[in-house]
Structures are given as structure tokens and as C-alpha cells.
Image 1 (cartoon, rainbow, N blue to C red):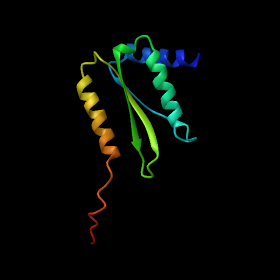
Image 2 (tube, rainbow, N blue to C red):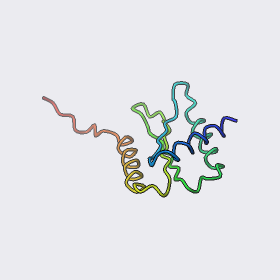
Image 3 (spheres, rainbow, N blue to C red):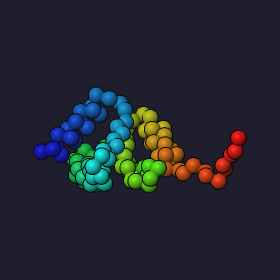
Image 4 (tube, one colour):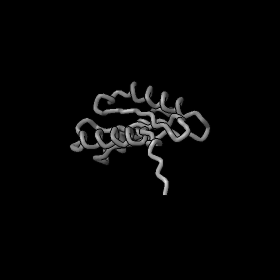
Length: 106
């Protein structure tokens, strides 16, 4: 089953790395929302999910299209707070619109 394989890969990644995992759903066919919902469901039924923080976010591009990303990190990661803060700050920065009221003429 694909779900079992994907979750085994995630588990293997964390067994060998003291890191965070960032995923971004592929957008080429417009199915990114469905991919995000599916992975969110898979991770929700994962028996070891309590050991991890799964933090899904939406990033809007310049045309206001939704792009789905998530941070997955073990709760016992020594850099947990720093990595979560950096991820949420980056998402906030990416979603902030540039100030168009400051048009400077040279």
C-alpha cells in the first residue's frame, strides 16, 4: 500500500536524522489540495504520530493560488522550538503581500 510505503520512508528518515522534514505538494496538475488532504489523513492514522508535530500550512503565490506545505518534526528534536518558529515565520513572510503604496520614482 502506498500509505504504508510513504510512512515507512518518513520513519526511516527520522530514525537516521535529527532533522525536520518539509514537504511541498506538487502543483503542476492543480491537485495539490487533494494531495495535502491525503497526506494529512495518512499521518493522522499513523500509529506513531504522537511522537511528531505535523504542521500543515498554505502558501499563496503571486496569483493567490494555494500551495500546500508542511513541517514534520519529532517532538524530542533538540531544535524543535527554533525550527517551528523559523518555519512559521517563513510562511508568514511568504504570505505577506508587498506594500504597493510605496511606489518610488527615480
